[in-house]
Amino acid sequence: MRSVSQPTSRRTPSDARRRALRRAFPDAKERPRFLTARLLRAGEVAALLQVSRRSIASWASRGLIPFIETPGGHRRFRAADVRSLVASLERTIVDPDVHATQDATTS
Image (cartoon, rainbow, N blue to C red; front, side):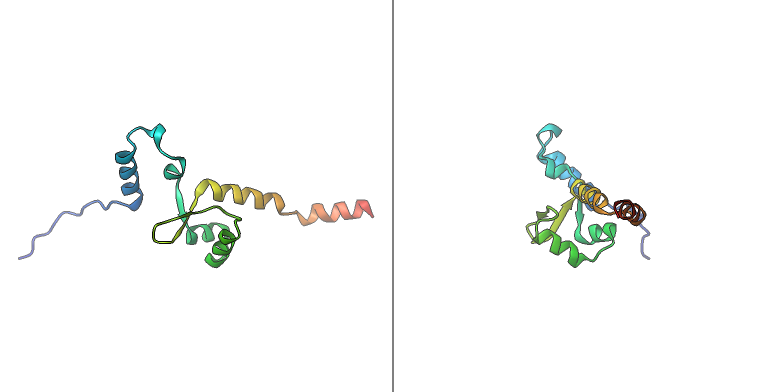
């Protein structure tokens, strides 16, 4: 008869990453900033910005969004960089009503 084992808690990659950081850099002040930042995959960034992963790859290649390349050649994006990109995109979006009002006053 098979023994029923207790369900074990599954460790997430984030947990493993945090443990590895604590082992490599016991003093939090010594940790490089890029290692302590939350890293996002291209698909996660694409979902946040509602664009395709291909667009994210293109933007990264053109230098519009900074990234970290993993040893396997995959791109990871800092959450802080994505937030700043979103903020810059929000500043460039023009409200059509405001734009129409400005055109009417200048004519």
